[in-house]
Length: 281
Image (cartoon, rainbow, N blue to C red; front, side, top):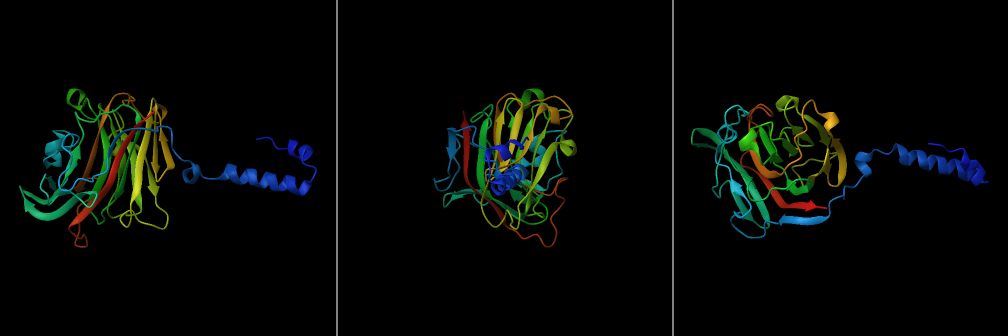
């Protein structure tokens, strides 16, 4: 940045120094705190969960069973929950989708929860995908808002690609992670970044989690603050994010990522989803 011209333009030397200080302040700002993401503005889908009782099954599918059963051989996380479609685990009430984790003996598992997806019903390539969510808390809880490539049945995981818009360890209620998984950078080798909520917790209020996804980039944000961008240059393998993906919401229990609950983990715990929105240009 060149600034010497200022002294010729402004004869008041004091004003020139003030101008330089302001410029340096703006340049030095953390873009994580200032940049608003607004590239995609045409709303293509919205579920505000205003119909009482059940989810809209014209959009959402239930995943039923254990995490390892759902994911198939070779892609399990040693989770401890059994996913159901019972109202005790998933319901729409008071304008909210509620995914509730219970500690109970059910189908050989010690916990029950819920997981839903839009595969075959709502799939989109590129756009702005976001949700307003209040997270549960406690060691061993693993809520997530994420996406999988719609070609998973043909090419399997991680070749299909995975975009984790938000995942979170319940024992760290101020920190979340946004990441991608693909061939050569999956599981513990995924490419991502943490976001830390300053002087607050994700379980005490609602926050908007989202991505803006286009050809050769995925931008991650919380409450419109951009905190990470991932491009093909950032991953150690093939970029596999150039086809339609579906949306997934779930709360897992235990597993490799978070570890098991402990005696201080309180049940039941509920993830509240106010709305889900999808935009395109």
